[in-house]
Image (cartoon, rainbow, N blue to C red):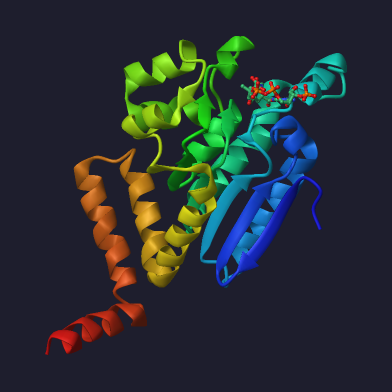
Length: 259
Ligand code: T3D
């Protein structure tokens, strides 16, 4: 059992609930350890087809626990520098979410601030409560820059000017703006957030796992590729995808329905 999160798997759908509600699920050392553990389980467990990430209580995730951050500054001889901390804790978490060939859905139940925003943006799909918001300028307010991928995710999803505005001027980027800016896929009443995530997860579960995993790989590569490179990579992955039994079966099934 974990202390800072809940983890359950039901019919192929894993749900990770960040569980430090008193601090709006801010990241601390223990949460990183436990997250590393569950993400390893997610990768290895073939029964897990889709992952939902959400928060307990009224927040999604308030980013780095600032009390722990201060404690690091108070004992600089033993503690990691912030760069080391990012490289060893946040960056592997974000890369793991992006590189695991299973879809991740962020069910954004409440406020996301700092690296909590980055966590949400690292997922493949996002559903957000009408009452939730993003606080990207939490970083600037403590004299830092957006990290854990936010300087990359934001301009890719919303464009440069909106990224800059979100990181500086906007205290609460509300759900309707998040939707209009392409930062989330859907906005729903608070009591529908998990239901929507579960419904999406159930539909994703019905698609062939290999194909969905390859799609995730191809889309992620495409963000750094030229068209020529993407065409080439698609052809390479398609060779492998077409060799799975599901491919032939599903083509046959389609033709049978018609025939
Ligand atoms: O490697 C590294 O360490 C660098 C990594 C950096 C990544 C980062 O994420 S930096 C940014 C860190 N996050 C923040 O600066 C956000 C701080 N929180 C807030 O600005 C606000 O709490 C929110 C805008 C998120 C929500 O505001 P509100 O008014 O809804 O709630 P609140 O009253 O401020 O917070 C509720 C409680 O949670 C409160 O505790 P209390 O008074 O009830 O005992 C508050 O102190 C606590 N809390 C919220 N965020 C954090 C936190 N405690 C520790 N760390 C937090 N990040």
